[in-house]
Image (cartoon, rainbow, N blue to C red):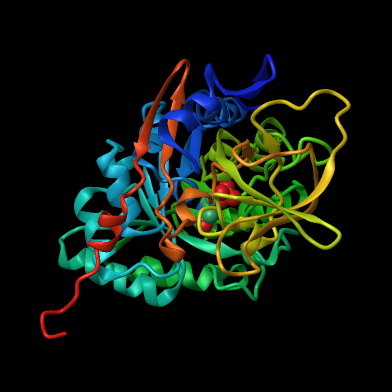
Length: 421
Ligand SMILES: *Cc1c(COP(=O)(O)O)cnc(C)c1O
C-alpha cells in the first residue's frame, strides 16, 4: 500500500494534489511520501518483533538527506556502500553504531573515514580487503568490527544484473571457504569478528532463495562457533521485492519474510540485521512528468514525455516495468489506446515502454510513473545536459523541495575551461 491515490478523480500524494506540485515545482519531478516511507519501515520492525534486530535502510536506493533523516528519526540504521553515503548518513544525524558498511571495493580512505567517525561493522567481502582493513585500523589505533559476506551460491531468480548470491557473482567469499577465511580474520590484529553477512540480490519475489541462503548461514554459525569465533550478529541483507504492477504480481510481504527469518534463526541467540532498500523507498515515490507531444507513428503513436532515461534508467537498464497513470483519473470505460512512451533523449534506448494501453492523452497532460522511489533519482544523470530533476517530499498536506533543479548556469559552471585553451 502507498499514499498515492485518486480523490475526486485527481491523483494525490498524501493530502497534496500532484497537480499542485507540478504547478509549483514544474515537471519532471520525483515526489516522495513520508507516510509511505514510515509505514514500510514499521512493516519490517513489526515483522521482526521479538528478535533483537536492527533494520538498516539500504541508502543506495534513495539517499536524499530528507529521506534518510525521516527514517533515521524512526530509529533506522543505515547500510552504506561508499564514503559518500557514510558522510550522508552522518550528516543526517545517524550515529556511527547504527551504520553498516557494505561493498566489494572499499578504499583505504573510506575505511579511515568510517573508523574515525564510528561504525557498527564493515561487511568484508574478500581476503585482500580484510588485510587492508586490519592495517588501516591498526594504524589508527582502532579495531574494526567485521562480518564476512559469504556467497551461499543460491539462485535468487531475479534479473541477472541484480542477482548477487551465485558463485559466479563478484560478491562475498564462497561459503565453502568460510571457515578458513574466518580463521585468517581472527589472526589479523586490527579486526574483531562480530558476525556473518549475506545478501543474495534485489527484487526477489519468492522467499525460497532467502530460506536456502539463511539456512546455510545458520549452519555456518554453528561451525564457526565450534571453531571458537564469536558470532553475535547475522546481517541477512536486503532484496525483498515490491509489486511494480497493481494487477498480477504479489511478492511476499514483510510479515512472511519476518516469519521466515524467525523460523530459520530459531533460538540461535543472535542479533539480526536486515538491509532493505527498495521495499522501503520504492513505492514511496513517483516520477511526475508531462506530455510534450503526441506523435503519430506507423501503426502506433508515441507519447513523448519531458522525463527521459537519464531521469529514470530502470526501464533501459533492467527492462523494468513501471505503471504509468494519468494525474486526472480517466472516466470509467474510456477506450484505451496503445502508446510507445518515450523521452526526448537521442537514443532509442530512451523508451520507457512499448504498446502500453493508456487513456487518450494530450500535450500538457500530467502522468506519473509509480514505484519510482527506489533506484530512480539516485541513478539519474545530466545526460543531454538535462538538469537533474528536483525531488519533493510530502508529509500530510505539506510539501517541500528537498533537492532543487539546477539552473543551466549551475550545470555549465561546474566545468572549468583551462586558461591555456
Ligand atoms: C543493494 C543492496 C541492498 C538493498 O537491496 P534492495 O533490493 O533495495 O532491498 C542491501 N544490501 C546490500 C549489500 C546491497 O548491495
